Image 1 (cartoon, rainbow, N blue to C red):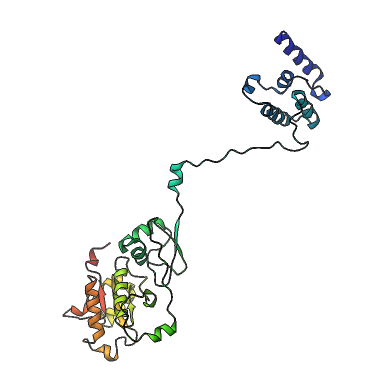
Image 2 (image 1 turned 90 degrees about the horizontal axis):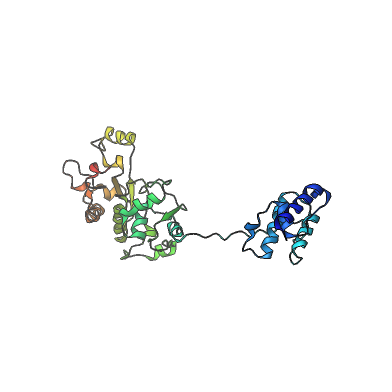
Length: 309
């Protein structure tokens, strides 16, 4: 058979009768010519794949379902999509490259508990309070000095899975008549600690912890101050300078909640002040009780704070 003459005959029949008159070629060559499908594009394809392609191209050209059926039957009748339905589309499986999967590991989420600071979380979860900076970098929208209970923060993948301390019931508190020898962070009063600088805060927590273990009831009476608050302290004679560590969160005044500054605590030799001084020095902090010109027994501060930015 002369293929050229045959294709010319099919083309002539298509142009003369046209699909609008119901003419549908009954051979694969005629169907491909009518639909504008290059025969070479079908090389290596199975019959179902060829029929699928014919079906999709015919639908795009607006050919009726009836005439599409006739085209499919011209190939053979072992494949015929349901009438008036779209062909089945097989979506390619999404493959995630291994290197991309490593760049987006499952996030390690921690829920902030009462008394938490980024530095104390870093100490407990990463083994070093100074690593609070790593946590801060993973949570750019969070203020490092102001985190709230229930807040969710992302921790580095190497963080330890340590559960939050269990709250202590009132009955358990009354049972304790002797100072505890183990640390119980759930009982520590962390009032005003959250505003302290992250380098200073974990050391203050350690001081509060040690004093609590000794049977005292310590709390930070004053932490970070505003310029206006410091100005009032100077005006009333309770402070000698506007260049105070309190202004930058590097200073804290700690008292026993039961005594404050009055009663027994008005004595500079009151045992609480001595224990506070020892605990502060153990953490490498400066104790105001050692100042000769203006002793401030409740005050502790971070050494070299003026050079810390």
